[in-house]
Every structure is written in structure tokens, then in C-alpha cells.
Length: 349
Image (cartoon, rainbow, N blue to C red; front, top):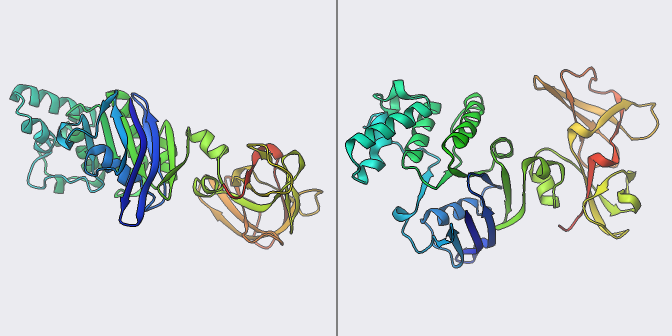
């Protein structure tokens, strides 16, 4: 539905976007994920019409989107700050865009009533934003965005102002609403968990360029570059050179088992990435694996994170186990993983 082709945007000597190309399908929940300053919000503003690219095209159903002013695009943008009118009621905030279009009052009331029912705020229609919780204000902003029935809804860090518990609830709510209203959502976020839980597909940005576009599970389990492996979720990264059968040869640790995503010549600089939940602990007297000593055990309710100091490796190896761990700080252990659970990448990617 939305085709972004070769978009470039410069601010003086700074290149915010460098030839970005993406395709987003009808009804898709698509996430733009990356660190601060990587260009994802600039791209969102170009789609919305608040920025003009230096090069490239953006088309919606084959029509040139860049030729239309922001108010003529079938797009809604939900701001990070929500930008609600404090002197208006919930119903008035939601109805504002429809009133500006001079729609009949009966149609406005009907559409506002329907969308407030959808977001679960019918009982709060007469309240003002100051009388609502953060999660409720977020729902008002969402209702105001979807009441105009846009083809495309852009969300800029929509959940960043919410606390952890409310954020988790609203992630489920956003996903439910997106399926219910059938609008294509494009969300900008720097929160990997948010992107993984919400999106059908994710584009990972770095330094103005797209590093990988993939479904969440594929992105997590098979990162296409060292940047994606390091940025998306927790990962244990080992540096060395590629060896036969996909293994990594580390100067301080020896041969480490892994699976290459692409064929790598022996001896080239490479990186092995293995997720904490794929690493297993064994008794220090067990054969195989890397010897180490437990530095710290942190309990997070459903999972425990165990940091293991392995001589010859710069950072502690992180191990994730379900529930509370019986291992204590200071214990000698072995850490190991299966070759199929670790990815070997070219180090310069």
C-alpha cells in the first residue's frame, strides 16, 4: 500500500536519511525501530507531510503522496505528547477533526460514539483530559486519530509517557484496535520489546539507513548484521574469526559452536551471537563448554538473569533461566550452547 523509494533527507552536513526504501502492506502493523537520532521520526514526518525529502518518492496506492499537503493526505499522526485540548471534553477532542471537515452533526455524533465505544471511553465522554489517567489520555489521542478513518495511522513513540504496567496493557489494546479498525499502523519506537510485541514486521534503522526488515521472531533469532544482533534484545557477542562448519575461532576461548547465516570464508573476522535464554549452565566439572564464575544473580519474577565471568571474554556472559535460580554468586560453572542456537556473522556488517 505504501511505497517509500530512495528517500534522502539532509540537515546541513548531517544526513538524517540515506536512500531509505520500504514497502508497507495494507492492514499491516509496521514498526520503525532504532536508537535516538537514527532517522525514524524524520521518515514519519516526511510521510505525514511535515518534512520534505531532498530525494526519493513516497506513494500511497500508486499516488504521489509528496505532491499533497499534509491536510489532504489520508493519514493521521498520533503525537508522542498526545496534544489534547485541555479545555475540551473527551468527546469534543475526538470530534474536532470531523467538525473542521464540516460534516453533519448527526454523523459526527455517531462516529464519535462508535470510536469511544471501541476504545472503552464511552463513560468518560464528558470529562476533560486533566481528569483522566495517562492510559486514558492515550486512548483519547488514539480515538481522535482513527475517527477520521485514515488509510494510514502514524504513531510517534505512542507509549513512552506511560508506566510499565499501563504500557503493557496498552500494547495489547493497540494490537486489538488495529485488527478491529483495519487501518495500517506505522509506529516509531526505540523500545525493542514494544516493537516485537506490536508489529507484524520491523525495520531496524541505524545512522539514517535501514539495516534489516523482518518479522519479529526472524529478526530476533536470525539478525542480519552485527548492529541488529547487538541492538535488538540482549545478546552475548563473541569476536574472532570464522572457522569450518560455522564455528567461531576465538583467540582467548578457542572454538565456539555456531551456525553462519551466509557462507563465510575461513579466517575472516566474524562475530558469534547467542541469546541468554539459549545458554545453558552446567557443573564446573562437566566436560565441554566455557569455564567461569557466577558474578551476580538477578530475579525478575518469571525469569532469572545470571552473569558469569568467563576468563578470556571481555564482558560477563548473560544466562537467562525460568523462575528462581539455585545458583549463587561465586559458584564455579560451565556455560554452553548448541551450534544451532548461535549465529555467526561477518564482523564488518
